Length: 312
Ligand code: ZN
Image (cartoon, rainbow, N blue to C red; front, side, top):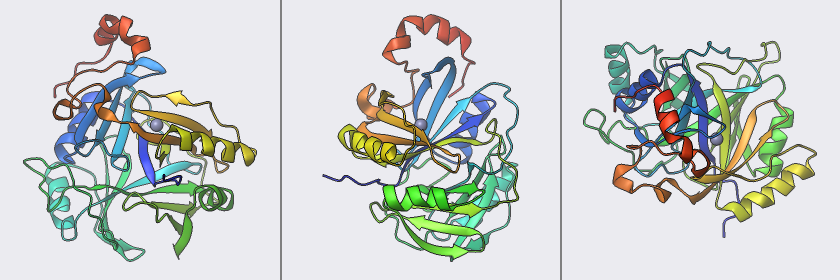
């Protein structure tokens, strides 16, 4: 029985156009769409999940494509950079691919002893491809264009930008079991040894920066991974014990969730491994059909009419 926080479960961000979002993550970045569903709280909007073959926690980036939503603003109190782990030697391949696909990207750089390539998705969401200095044996999803020598293995970590890192650091170390390992400038790295990959949270302290605005091209929340819903509820008690508000257990069909706002302002979720993405369609068909939660199934005709068409 593993009762730890096993790194990142998924990250959820906001896009302004479903087709553009789908094309970028599946075609340019070469991820698998593992689930096509709707926002359970707003079923007129898609909810896309991109990950590896099975949608293993730690590989899943999800989007609410709210058509035409205004662009958000990067700032404090939000997750500001998503890091994907890629194989050593693959960054030139990616820089060339981004250039040919007209994707906004920077130069290869080094941060905390790791080579990385910064880029933006079509909504301006900030991501990095990082060559981890630690081993990462996770098997990537591959496509005809993006083979095993270059494919993203899943998350490396996430950056949160904060006015003051201390309250958030307290949650990571005292509740989640992370340890602070390194620092570079105003970037403080926290790592868990509970899992290989998706194990890093970087806290960037930026007291002068404006508070961020969560909208198009920004991150909505970060979900951390627990083994099952019994462990989930143990963490609910721990969060309540810190004097923070937290939701009841919510059934997200593919996992069970709790949500709370950590003291630095970032929306955190805790999410379970069970039951996973094969609960309502076979592995070889993940992401191919529109899946609706049972409470919205009776509205299927209306929802399908309302959602923008998507060429897969
Ligand atoms: Zn979530």
